[in-house]
Length: 261
Image (cartoon, rainbow, N blue to C red; front, side, top):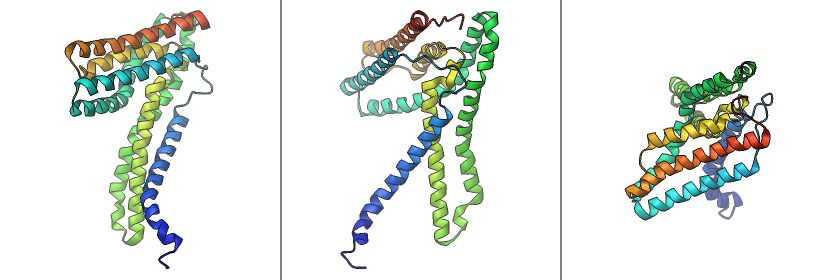
């Protein structure tokens, strides 16, 4: 092959960008699968969409991120900055399990408070979140199951280039299963297993409960005690206020009553 061959010149670029392309493909396909699994159920009641409310939630989220970063930058250390990133991942991974523990209690209380003629329909609508819960547990089990299969089959026993390709394929499959679980966790944290199918106000109710549970688990943020306690209490308080404002808008603008469903 000539030294000026285009293929030879492109080889370094292929070596650099091929892993990035594979990583992008794994991330994109895992995200698409997670979105497809946890999308709104077509047979469930369509959730109420409120553009103003969505913008307020987005604004609150970015303000919370900005305040946390600013406090960590002004008063914290490099360890505090790393802990801030770690807390974000912890929240992403813990939220689905808090939902699994909290949602049954909130849903049961809401159904008991509903009129008798509405309870049957609300119990029937539980099929949507239960199905998504089963899918989420499936994404969690998928990764260790795949690793177990890889260990049992042991692709390294296959010699030559075939064994190398099998090993790479197993690594890619394992990474994809982890990405699928992470994207599924994010989708579940955002949609709450589709509990809006039971009652449109349920996501707001669950949010107002979950933020206080996460605050209790997370402990004090970085910074001086007055600022840390303000952030610890102020963050969940603002989220709860927005959640109850959402319930108020559902009642006044869309006729969705909390007790009547």
